[in-house]
Image (cartoon, rainbow, N blue to C red; front, side, top):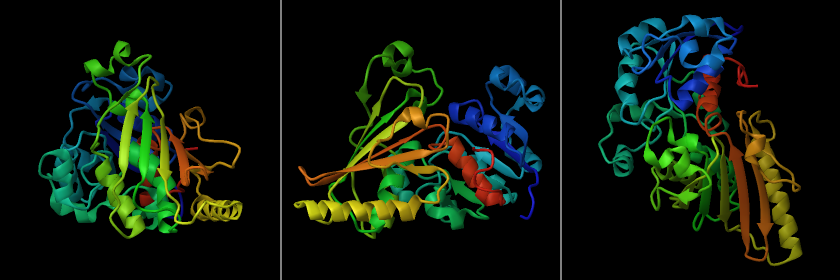
Length: 356
């Protein structure tokens, strides 16, 4: 596309945390006309009434939430974002794709290539297995060329993004072993979505830390799928997510064994150079991945409110391991910001449009 032109966009499930962030980003996107937002709960109310912080946008004072209807959305929009629970998104994706619309799905419905793996991790048959082969995994740093012109985009989850970005380059380069990888992630409470459940109430979360989804968190399915593709062999990791009492942000720590030894100073020096070169080659020109030097490690305060993932790492000769740390905003690079980044590629906009 030679010049910026307005693309008509709709958001289904616009009242959740990811949906709210999508609305904010799209209202300010110079190439987008936000034509529809849906929410059964808020149908009939304006965006500005539901989200007063958007009231300075004239469009937010005019646009009203409506009941979700795939046929109407297909008439109104060129691109439809689905910010819906897994199993529900596919119900909208099928008719929208049949109508020739672009679908960008933030749920897990189209992230997996194998319907049997979906059933194993999500406990029910995939609602639209015939569409899996059409979906492009929406991690631009890995699948940028496939995303250009895609019709069905499966935006990755927040945990997978924080794990895949630091690990995939090292596995592709053969710098770490594919077995024995241990991952621990800490997530803000917004990662659970906007819902009224006892375990996510303020008094239940504040001043408390807890692990959950042990030992088989659902996101393991897409994480191991993409790591296996990077390594060229099946990869199984040990992953423990934790809930921490902050609103947003994810910090992930990965421990892996290098394929080279760390027994001497020379070996440490050589591996340091190879890892630096690996990350520089992978992300040196990436607008939304920031690789830190040896004086800093990622910190969620530096990425919350941005579409950036920070990556830092250390070698540990004492134990013979590589320790890699990443930080991201779970609602932006881990969800809505990344989805808009994908839309920019699909529609031919500059990838950073509306995200800087």
